[in-house]
Amino acid sequence: MTVNPPELPSVSGPMTGHDAVQSAPRENRLIADLMRGSVMTTVLAIVLSMVIGGILIAVTNEEVQRTAGYFFAQPMDMLAAVWNSVSGAYAALFRGAIFNFDAPNFVRAIKPLTDTLNFATPLIAAGLGVGLAFRVGLFNIGGRGQMLMGAAAAGFVAYFVEAPLFIHLPLTIIAGMLGGLVWGGIVGLFKARTGAHEVIMTIMLNFIAYYFVSWLLSTPGLLMRPGGTQPISQATPPSAQFPKLFEAPLNVNWGFIVAIGATVFVWWLIERSSLGFRMRAVGANPFAARAAGVNVERILIYAMAFAGALAGLAGVNQMAGTITSGFASHIDAGIGFDAITVALLGRSRAWGVFAAGILFGALKAGSFTMQISEGIPVDIVLVVQALIVLFIAAPPLIRAIFFLPKDEAERSQAASRKANRQAAKKAVAA
Image 1: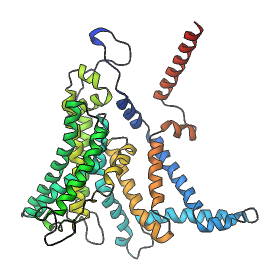
Image 2 (image 1 turned 135 degrees about the vertical axis):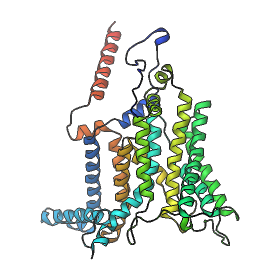
Image 3 (image 1 turned 90 degrees about the vertical axis):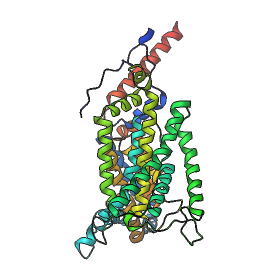
């Protein structure tokens, strides 16, 4: 349903008496700045990151280095080497992520696209969790721990419950989401009741989850593979696995459809529901939200619980869709931290996170082809991802590089700084 939100107390001008409301906390303003930006600045940030990545590829290329030695004698040799290295690298990235135009048949040609979707699925789910927390003004750095607890909870149901697919798989998904929900809800509860900072809480709970899951995987009778000696679980039963959407060699499974459903749910929750309005109000200014009658503490608990459930869904996808032969304590594969990048790139909007997850899935899928066919280290792609985050987090830098006009918020901030400087000069002169 469409919600007509009530009016919140104004926080833009000075207020006195019982109507006075504090300005938003610094972390809320920081998150708002990170989420502020247009599609144009996002696209330019990606393009600029790819350009810098191309420069790094060219600088580290042996042929470019060799021809640079006689650049002034034959400059075209070096320019040709630069073009060949960069175009070859990004062509390999495209072949490994979208469409392999060298493949012998159409199925093999589109296999890279399914690899991209397969890599993107857990990134989307975990990114939605981080992005939802961002919208409420919370830094959820605990995606790793929430994924691990989700995978562990799903593992217990997958390994110790026998049921047909249409019962077993939904129970596995629900168990995994509940595991992540509890782990995220703990953070929300402590944040709401004691004021403990969620960054410290989530980082510490990441370590607790890691060692707890390691213990579960090392203890016979729990998650440890029967008859084994290594800290690894047994294979996921077929009835608890996400079925393939297509026949081999295409890799994408029904986990991607579940990720789409999660995206729709988060979009509706944040943008269309009354609970979502209260979440956004708390994210904008918890003091103003409380003055308008919102139970801020309850919203914080709800937000972290939802965020944990979504990260738990990413953990389920790993053990029931990607790593079905048995998982270890590193099943998160860094996705919990990559989700922060995905959420930032997607501006914490549901469909923005969805698109960002697919982009990062493409970068990961294509990086292997780059390494195999062109000899380019996978680390180059990690550098590109880091640069995207850097530029996304600094919209004024993008506008300065591409000579774009300042947005309204930046003009307002500049005017405020100018007024403060003038006021300070007058005070000194007086």
